Length: 375
Image (tube, rainbow, N blue to C red; front, side, top):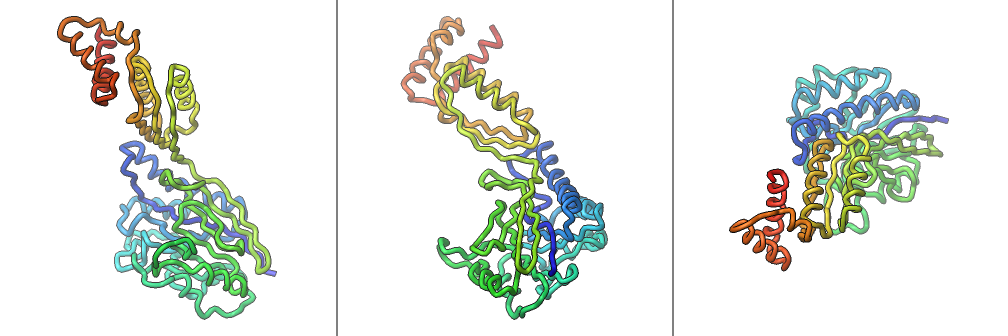
């Protein structure tokens, strides 16, 4: 009985940029996507995997910078005993401008890197074959995986289908010719024509259908806030009769959304402790809605807290649109103004207290900081 063990990954999207990352943070994000290749290769060796399949979107586009290509190929070349099978996806289709046909790629491609260019069965190990469904354009007009599986005949080999794209699920509205037919895949599994389907496109790992043999690996490094449990690869142990799929965490970046309610200094203490305790701050992106009600002094403290941790984190997007700033007696005593400035202060206090102007609260906070730092 043939048994194969391999690593399933997808959606590396090498060369990706994020609009909310600036300067050094973007450089770290770019490097992390190269570094994860090395962790994948090391894991494949450690887990005694025969090969690695990358189910589409290896590159962010067909026009990534030359250093991205050569550094990625160099990372894969460092473990020559591990073959990498790369599937062109919707980001990097195998069209006339394909990155896989570029001089940079072809000249620097190591022997252990193979591009899955066609749907013909590719024997990758004794008794193991890959059936690939590469994208040849950004807008295919049919189910590529379904077409790749047409005409398959029974075999004693273990077959792995490598595909990319969304599944045709019952709850979806409308038609999309690119959608992969889940029912057709399940029928092929039931008929033992295929033993595993390695899918890419969805950045969150998930098992699909009823067979236990159709999986999205998810992206090995997170890319956005809406991804569910990204940062994994799958170790697949497979025979014609049995399957075992184990997830392994390889990602280092995190995207965190949080809502924090403030009602006093104790809540500010808690926020400061939470931010201070975050690990790997340089690889953490936070989007935080701060709500509640604070005094001017507490709002100034909040600003300093967010400013400090913005310097430590990759991104700290602290949104305070729904935070109400209400001056208390200590705030008013702190100003120590007179004359025109005092009258302006009381006008702002009245406007802020009635909730009629968010700008009044902002102006009070600015005035508080100026007086505080220039007594």
